[in-house]
Image 1 (cartoon, rainbow, N blue to C red):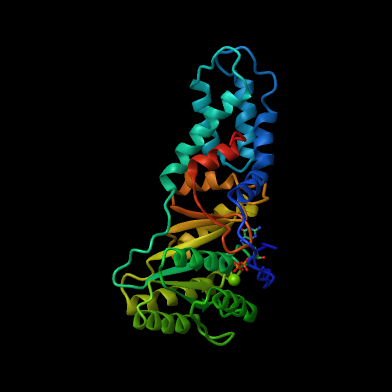
Image 2 (image 1 turned 180 degrees about the horizontal axis):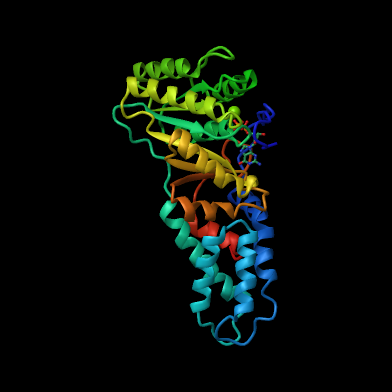
Length: 325
Ligand SMILES: Nc1nc2c(ncn2[C@@H]2O[C@H](COP(=O)(O)OP(=O)(O)O)[C@@H](O)[C@H]2O)c(=O)[nH]1
Ligand SMILES: [Mg+2]
């Protein structure tokens, strides 16, 4: 589904009735269950009190690395645990409290919602990422979020590479009753973006969200295409794009990190949205990304429906990863 280069199915799930808060957090928790089981699974035999011994610390560090948190975050958490003096009879949970606190320390500095602040309007949000990462779906969710905050939104179908991609965005635009600027399949994305910025400016739109193609297998072409979009945007508004949001699929695990590297190089990334944190065992990569790149994380995707984009809550997520939420 999310292999580089394979076209994503152009499915647009129905916007079903809103779920309760519990449903989505259950799905998020479900996605991290294997991570938290792996962490606590290594703790059997910790009784008494005082400090963890080096075998226990090794086991925990390994489990953190296996859970995609990355070697740096894992070492940092290990160091923190090594310093901790536990009370007599401290159980697994007491240890996981320390783990969660340290993960939250890593995540807190990068939690930053995407705000509509650009003046003059519109705020131009360029959305990039490999095919199948969830760009188009995330754009729809983001548009919905902005609408809920009473901002006017316009979409630009800058992924002209696949006809289905234009159609998929158009279906969402229709469903959300927001205008979309689109061109022909195979057309020049930069000209779509040019038209869209002009239309959004003329109509006093608050936020223009631009979809793009994610042809990572042809880095040169991708780079040229994004550079051209940048040039066109800059000509109309020197501040644009105001945001370059990289959408990452959490199920890709460590591959998400190499995608950050590549897209930073070809497009300059200002922030991240990580999708598919429902039902993946690899969401720990979010911690690795925060620790290694320090890029703002704007939101997380926890499902395919329109309101499945959630604020990035570092304390909650840290507790979910540690299995004590
Ligand atoms: N479970 C789940 N699926 C998602 C999420 N975000 C996107 N998807 C699905 O991932 C697939 C690819 O998404 P799409 O938006 O077309 O990706 P794009 O190629 O980057 O534009 C679709 O089937 C989406 O419904 C998410 O947060 N959770
Ligand atoms: Mg798409």
